Image (tube, rainbow, N blue to C red; front, side, top):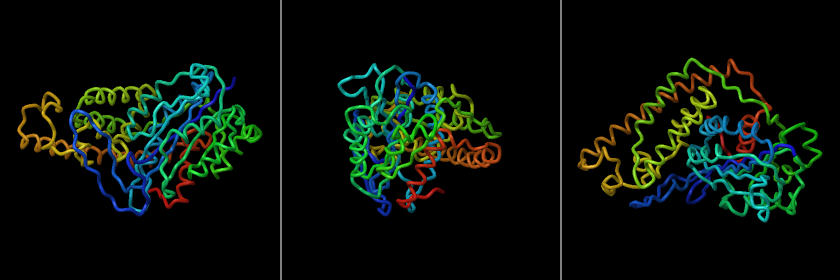
Length: 385
């Protein structure tokens, strides 16, 4: 059986979904030992659902996804809808794996729409491959049924599905699934892993046409090449400093802090340049950790310093008076802001360097996804800085 992949990137709000022209407001909640996720309301949102076919030897394409996740996030960080920077949520499914439930079409939701980029990375790295049946229509329909896509027509909502078997397999006809997507204002983009014309003859292009999505063909076994730059070492040093500004709180705080370090290590396993790209993502507005990081939670107005129970704080902060704690937090926030600005300045120089030295690979997962997102985003007044 040939290899497949379905990639769904999701970007959105956790609470409500609104248009590009709305003013920014915030929803404030009280927090105790149980952290409740909230998000800025009245901001535009981009949701991209990624459906991964994990049948047989999908390792090459999954490796592309792991290696290119942070590049895609970084490119999306430049998106603007009017004057707003849209929220990003990603959902991930796997399908076609014989280890999954047959009655459910060999499909599993790996993670629903989430803003937690570390958790998304963890789930992506956990995927393994196995033989199975690949039902494209079924997994598209499942993602449409299970995920909250919202009803605002101004939001950008996209599915990316990739593979190299016939698009017509399974009991659910792809035309029915994509028609449902069209009704929900969700664009289906198809990525065939192989010859462009073969993908057309096996109905991958037809699957995209119903929602006016993009059909693309890539070499799924192509190795991702990360180009080093003169700015990489400085960015990694800043990343180490950035990590020290995170103040965990709550029941899951320490675990999430450890997850952050783990995903730094996972990125490093794909090479130094990939670790750099992740560090850049961590300096962007898309990297949100309000569920466990005190600074992000305060910035998002999800809690106040006066309302934080001492038992929720890390050991080194327990016993501090509220006045001393406020001073410490303000100083740490100032330090984080300075570090992220330094990383962004170096990223700008790095982008210019890479643009001059790297030949674009139009046949790679990263480029076909970014190009499709930008093309479809223009229809809804999204622009790139």
